[in-house]
Length: 206
Image (cartoon, rainbow, N blue to C red; front, side, top):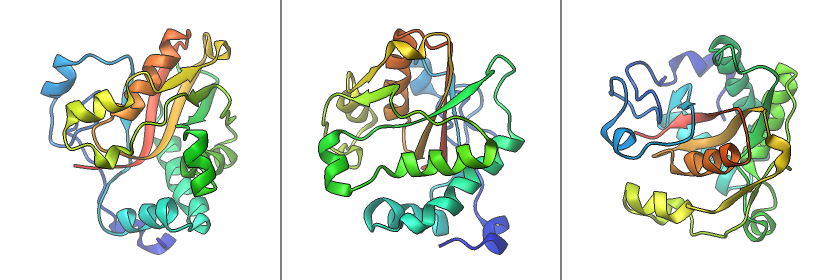
């Protein structure tokens, strides 16, 4: 796990990065986001997906290390506390990226929900995992080789409830590689009437 005393040495995602998908070393919007406009307002992350952060996420996600969730959720909370979303993001609701029920049964928990719950507790923000559901059990994104494959893999995979209308949503996930999953979630939320949708992940893969 990541001890509190060593968080200062973690590789942070620093500017410049894509305004939309947070791709590192990009000014303004990256070429992909310019060519494929998304309904997400933006994706943000405190760290790069490497070193201790990568190890901790892998243990949480694949090795059953739920004990890592409080500390990793705390890192998300610290970032959000010091990097406010735009003023129009009032009464924010944290919404974890959902797993399909079949995968949830297999894993036993949703790591994004654990992260959202810990961050919400520290920031006194509501967490709601009923506003967004995964309707399609698409293959894991790690199996998709290209950005286009990742985008197609999750298209139409999510369903948002009418309860999101007019609300400001912060999507919570562990890692963003291309942002395709978060963008697919945002499309469903915006189509259901959400006012704002931002994505917040622990780490951005470069």
